[in-house]
Image 1 (cartoon, rainbow, N blue to C red):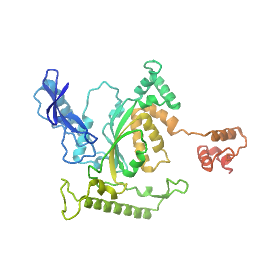
Image 2 (image 1 turned 30 degrees about the vertical axis):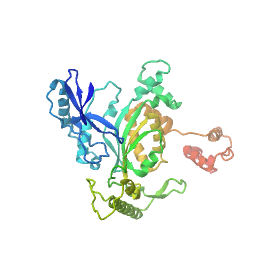
Image 3 (image 1 turned 90 degrees about the horizontal axis):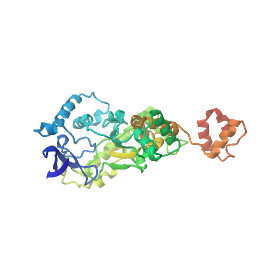
Image 4 (image 1 turned 135 degrees about the horizontal axis):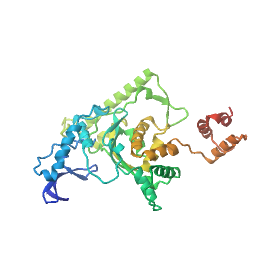
Length: 410
């Protein structure tokens, strides 16, 4: 089909007989200045900011006269109506009614394709997975799967398709020996809503493409993350970047009161500094109004933000190995666990190999391996003399509690 301008921002797509088969609308993209063409039948012009990316669509398009060229639109709209009887989900409260309808419409839509798809992951498309009550992870798009990984690996030596058991063996071999290139062929794109302090850890993984909601362009919503009372803990005595035991319930409630009061006060001051209404007009001409990029400065890092995150599978697994680990901060670990559930559906063979060779595996240093061999052989050994630090000895004893007395001198 050809795409020719008709009248900005609409475009007509001509079918094989030269008649207009579909009306496309040019809409804002995810980056400033970028645009996307989508059917007008699913377009909705938003008067305000829509950070969720879900408020663009509805199926109330123009009346269609050419049943031959675009009859598929009518059929799909009927199919939409049948699919809109979803039960209430646990993540519904965080969306407006328009956003709920938009998500259901996106999930009900279908597009013919010849590319590889993963049925289990298709079922999870667009549906948010609730994280930390006010956050979510939502699958937006993906490319490839286990089949694509082994296909990419076998091109190295010219072999064709093998059985599932052969595929599993090859994927485990690739994972075990850290042959990363085939895993990099698979890509996933997620829409994430998380507290800013979580994203600051998240974005330390610099191997992804990211586009975040901008508080320079738009006004932030009054949405904050507050931990559960049982997750409020003292500083760890052994880990300088971790938490220790939980506070007593009464003290935890006092902490939550402080956090809520601070968040409310900071957001009220934020709105006061903006001094603008929903339409962008001035609320009180007698008060100063400052730029959005300045007004945001006093907001706490537990305010919620949103971003799109695209990453290849290998770098995603590296992220999950670190952030789904028990040593990671609880809040980002909750997001990593949600993503792990999607990865298991997406690439089950790779997920199994990842669990066996990365997530549930242990890396031993040369000195630790020498100490372990000596213990197994019944030879007296001094871990400190072999060069192990106190922390390394503790970690080795945790991995092998059966030999802990010989390592610690107990």
